[in-house]
Length: 399
Image (cartoon, rainbow, N blue to C red; front, side):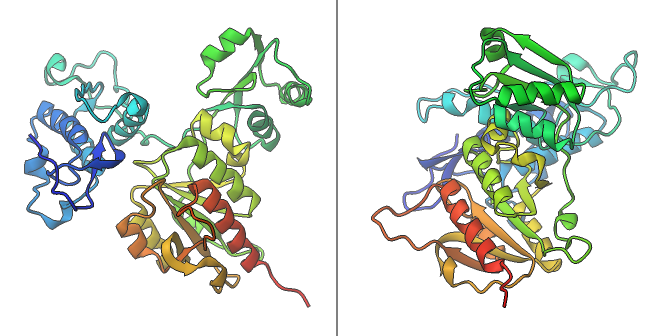
């Protein structure tokens, strides 16, 4: 049993990696994410390795308030090192409030990313050394990368057209609704590009396309492509060869709303951002909804996934990148003194803003001056203003 935290504390309720703003948090190990804890204990127990209390004792200051998804990922790593491969993990949560149904997919995604994808067995005939029914495991296989950025399904006319025009990754198939309206001519462009690039093109009914789509409004077109490649963080911090402009990076601290992430990526590309840093856990990656909202920006931005944003910001500092956090209470952003130097703009999650550790790692914290009665902006709107302000101040003067 986990009692609620005392009134007046700033601890929020976290379940399956999803934060529930306005809900009282729980007392317990790390951030008291009981769903992530249950998953970690199930994995560790199946492999005979104990539980999180033994491996990550709450008496150790390193685990006070820690991200439970990080502990879950570490538990999965220990299970693999012990010779087992997680193949299936079931979790049932029963409670009255808050309602979990709207967050189920986000929880599934975050937990799955923490555990990692199952790796194929070395041989189909090879049997595990322990009973498979008891452990839900298969024999260990070769190393495989953790779940990456995504981007293998692109939806929306502008996004699919840009995917084909950019030519940066292989496109396996383009599916178009046969009765889709094409007043703008975009679908015609897509058909011509796919034909020119010899990409298989398939026409289906509207119902079939809707069944294939994973966004709410695919605009009559879905493309299957190779996943986006991750870029190393150190590479993002490097100045372009040939005297190019200094890096202008965008680091996102736990943006979970796909629409906001897509809008931010579109703004970033238009403002001249050279690279984007995303956390591997507790953050949206490139889903079809994100790709559609980004309107093709994902084809032109270098994207890095990092295990933890605070450590990534520290590393950027070592590489000479100046980090500017955007949060309430900071220095007005229009007063910043920015030269043509490497800079990373850091944006916080919807609602809570920058996390404490991320804020502490920023070289300076800035805010957008507000003139009206509302106290905050949507993160996508705030990000657009901040990106263009940084871009404007980095613009070389002439004369």
